[in-house]
Amino acid sequence: MEQRARSLGVHLVLIAYSLLAVGPILLVVMNSFKERSAIFGAPLAPPDSATFSLIGYQKVFHTAHILTYYSNSLIVTLVSMALVLLFGAMAAWALTEYRFRGSTALALFLSIGIMVPIRLGSVAILNMMRSAGLNDTLTALILVYVAQGLPMSIFILSEFIQQIPKDLRDAARCDGVPETRIFFEVVAPLLRPAIATVAVFTIVPIWNDLWFPLILTSSDSTHTVTLGVQQFLGQYITDWNSVLAALSMAILPVVVIYVILSRQLIAGLTSGAVK
Amino acid sequence: MPEPVSTITAQISRVKLAGLLLFFLGPALAIYSLLSIYPLVATMALSTYTNDPSGGRHFAGLANFQALLGSALWSKPFWNALGNNLIFFAVHMCVQNPVGIALAGFLSLPGLRLKGFYRTVMFLPTMLSVVIVGFSWNLILSPLWGVAAGALKAVGLGSLFAPWLGLESSALVTLSLISVWQFVGIPMMLIYAALLNIPDELIDAARVDGLGHLRIFFHIKLPLVLPTISLVSVLTFVANFNAFDLIYSVKGALAGPNFATDILGTFFYRTFFGNQLQLGDPTMGAAVATVIFFIILVGLCLYLFLVQRRIRRYTF
Image (tube, rainbow over all chains, first blue to last red; front, side, top):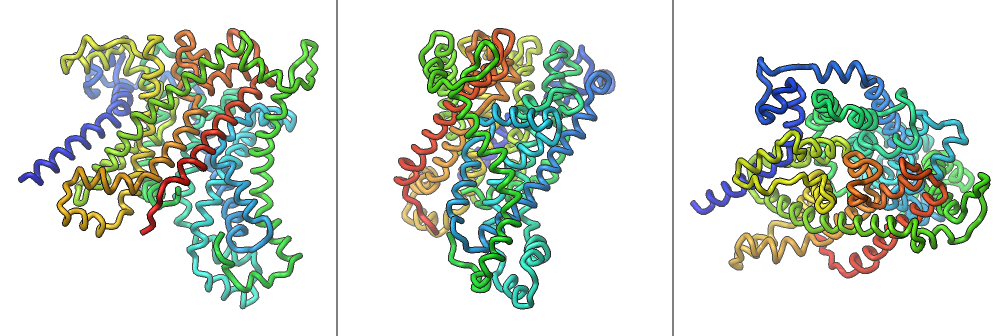
């Protein structure tokens, strides 16, 4: 009996906190589908046939280049992640597989990037991008994000590579397979489970970043979703339909992807990759 | 560093090894050095220069830092931002960690149902952009919409409502709590994982000795996850002293009201890029970034040399 009461109490606490966590998000998304009077009249009521309206979404599509922002964010995030995975796995392979002088120093050098935010070098990054003619391009963003994501991914991937049985690669070596083929054809395919873990640490910060788009891009055609929505919100602050719609459009893709991937993502977070 | 993994790789000739290292490490090291390490160093170098009115740039030693820490024009906003940043961090430490520990403690109870559901839902805010979170809370707390006021009224606390984000006295703490709301998922997850790693025999032994749930949690589990808690604290420290997005998206570059929510990140942005009140100053901006770098470095060193060394780790 006492056991049951205790378990009920625990569930009550967890339900209450879950409501606190999703309530605000639900409230914004729900009200984005309502007409103005209903947003203010009954904010907690879900939209019904009388109050349903897509006017906010129509305005966002008309006034903001939201599709451009989405495609920019997609390009930047996916290209950065692909490069982080490729170069990160290659570097992790070299660091774990070959003995050479300075490998410890190199690992230390890389760990600077995990602890010190790359943002602090923004003044010099902007100067470099300007002199290289990359200012206001997606390439600039991709380069910065790859540099930002590499150190963490190298450490995570090193742990994975260490777990691959040695015999596998040594057998290939005895057959005279070149090192590059051992990496790309034997080791790389085995790293697939690591992708989800690395993705947690690269995709989310890149997709959500405001700082680098803000300082490195200046035109609408290069804005990402986060920056584009931020600027839109600032301009249309009094138009509640549009503001709620723009917020929902930034929230929904992330929530959908999160719900699909949450299992791998949480496994990655709790697997002890972060020590 | 682990033992040599393969006897065969040890036999690779030096020339060939150099080629392999260049191929495998080259791209990552080139991008990382050029866009992460070099800019940090170049920013520090730039912080020792000042701009002439004529547009030229000349070496000025530590003049920027003297101005930043001592002159009337720069030091007031700097110390204000640093003080606010400390409050921002303190709120995180005092609220985020205990809430994260409590949630992790509940989630790790054996036999709890719907565990996966709670975990997923409670981690959701952490996935969202800070911009979106800040703006959503801005709407919810707005007296115009009246959601927060209505919710308080419903539980009989209507008189407590105030436009918290707009008041000089409460804006900073409110923003800190919004940030805690968003990021509590990280300590929750990491501590949860650490709690799951505690072997069952240990807990069973304590139970046989007659300890109750609460005492087991405080006397056995909590000390064992202390290394994770200190890791979370240092992660929070770095993130807080690098924070910018939330204040900028809710309060703008001027971090109102009357700079009450100005932290080092927004101060850096204003100094570097300028705003309605002042022109951007790259060399002074570089100096601010350098100071932030050293603050973070001091925090990291304190963690590495004081905290991490003293904590006893148990491996199971």
